[in-house]
Length: 446
Image: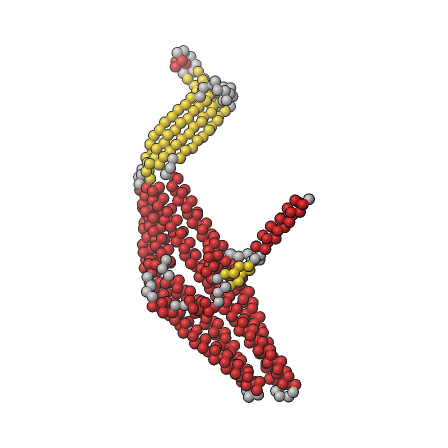
C-alpha cells in the first residue's frame, strides 16, 4: 500500500513538473532570445530540413555511380502450349506435315543483374551540381538566421518601445487624474469654471483611450515576439535588456565611416552560390553530347516442368550467365540538345547581368540606409531634447496652474505639446534603433 502511494505521488509530481515547465516563463536578453530562435523558429526549422534534403540529394546522385543490383523472378503456366508445324521430311518420313507442341507446361526463371556505370558526363556533372545545390542551401540558411536574428531584435525593441510609451502615458494619466480631482474641488469652491473641469476630463478620457490602444499594441508586439521565438501560447517571456542598453550599443561613427565591401555581404555571397549552380546547369546540359559507358553481369537459372514440383531438389535447374559492356552514343536529336545548351548559356549570361545589378544595388542601398540612419540619429537627439523641454514646461505649468498663475488654456496647450513630444520621441527612438539594425546588417562581414 505504501509503495502504491509513493508511485501515485511520483506520477503526480512528474505530471505537475512537466505542466509547470511547459507553462513556465523565460527571461531573455536579446542575445539569448536570438539563440533560442535559432533552434525553435519555424522558418529556421524548415531551413535545416532544406539542408538535410540537399544532403540526401547528394547521396542519391552519388549512389547512381555505384553498383546497381536487381533481381527478378518469373513464372509461366502454358495453359495451351504453342504448336509448331514441321514437314514430315524433316522427321525422316513422308506425307502430311507433323503438328508438334513445344515447351513445357510450367516454366520458372530466376535471374539477377549487376550493372556498373563506368563513364557518364551527366553523372559526374550532376554530382557536382547536387553539391553546389547543397552549398546554396547552406548559404540560404546563414541568410535566414541573420534575417530571423534581426526580426527578433526589431520585435524585442518594438515591445520595449511600447512598454516605454505605456510607462510615460500611465505616469501622465495619474497626474491628469489627480488634477481632475483637484479641479472638481476648486470648481465647487468657485475658484474655476465648470468648463475648465470638463476640459480636463476630456483630456483624461483622451489619454485613457490612448493608454488602452497602446496596451493593446503591447499585446500584439508581445505575441509577435513569442511567435518569432517559436514559443507556445502558454509560455511567457520576460525581457532582461532595456532601451538604454540598445542605445548604448549604437556606434554612430563606425556605421557612418566604415568601408563597405560587397564581397562580404550575405546577399552577394548567396548570389555567387546561385551563379555557380546556374553554371553547373550549363555544364550539365553540355554533357548530353557525351557517350555513356556501363558494364553488366547477368546470371539466371530456369526450370521446366510438366508437373508442378519446383521445390523438388532432385529436379534440374538450368543456369546461364553473361557479362558485357554497353556504350550509348548520342548521334542526332534534331537540335533539342543544342537548344537546351543555348538556354542554359543564356541563363549564365543573365546571372552576369544580375551580378552587376546586385553590386550597384548594394552600394546604393548602403548609402541610402546610411543617410537614413544619420537622419534618424539627429532626429532622435532633437526629439529627446524636445521631450525633456516639453516635460519641464508641462510640469512647471501644472505648478503654476495649481498656484493660480497659469490658466486652464495654458495648461491644456502645454499638455497637448507634451503628448506630441512623447509620441515623436518614442517613434524617433524606434526609427533610430531599426535603422541601426538595417545598416549593421549591410556592413556585416560574413
